Image (cartoon, rainbow, N blue to C red; front, side):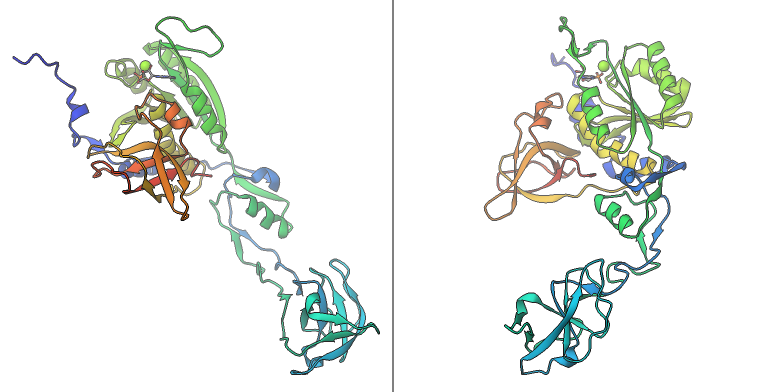
Length: 422
Ligand code: AMP
Ligand code: MG
């Protein structure tokens, strides 16, 4: 008889049955989440990062009328014979917001400022640096200019009736500017999803109290608070829930009455699922997924009443990995936006990275540009899923696909910067 303790086969078999891929988990999330429907009309400043409800069509063209792109002289090209230098009479000035009212005739020009309307009778702006003012106050210009020079056309940014912001778009700072350029003061956006979250574990203590033997501080609620605060959601922190079915039931039903999305951390180790499972099954429908990733393999996904439930692992790094890979996309869909995939960049690995095939690994990296402007990435030391400083030192995940069997220094790897959703 072997005197070895039998290892949990799920920990050693990389091709364990029942594992689903990252892509499959995302597909299921997208299928099962219904976007919020309710909207609110807000001043555009308050619409930053919110999801636009209806396509915005432009009520007028931007710019509304042709205007100058430079400080200089508005001229008729007909007044400037090619291959010679002409002296023109300056008959006035056109300012931005204060147009020149007269008409420019042959042999005349109008001094013009950037943004000023193009005066009648002119069809080009010669920049100030290409003109000379004579002692007599006449304007000398050569013949090397063309019609339309330095003129911004009406509608060259936006034409009246064009869709400028699609339904379902998240509003960026530039979008706020575009809305303002169209004179739109308020916009209808989807309401924010409400997200409630709690930690589970009898070992957890709140910060601010001396640490008791056998206990640890609850860090997950703080990293979750940080990640959620950067998203356009309303958050409810439900604190720590003790490891018993009654407390779990109570927390879940309270959360379900207030939130669109409920996130828990912990309680997924063998044995612990014994108290989470019955509570979940009593209150709603749930599935326990094992996703082929490291860290963060177990994820509970389900529904309690109208709320979606996502049970993340307990290990602090696994919480951040599963949040960034699954909760962020889930919130995107819930908010009414399109589910986006994080952008990956290619980087040269500076360190050897250990990796077994069978799962996608999210190792923590520090990426920066080398002297040739190429990304290079170092690892942040120990990669255990409880080593949270590996996350705080990092600025990216090094994403190693299922098939990868380890990395040597100099190999090219994919990296995913944190905060990819912003
Ligand atoms: P569990 O899935 O509950 O067994 O948790 C896995 C590991 O993560 C255990 O070592 C827990 O002590 C730890 N853990 C769970 N929740 C937290 C938390 N909120 N803060 C810090 N560590 C936690
Ligand atoms: Mg626990």
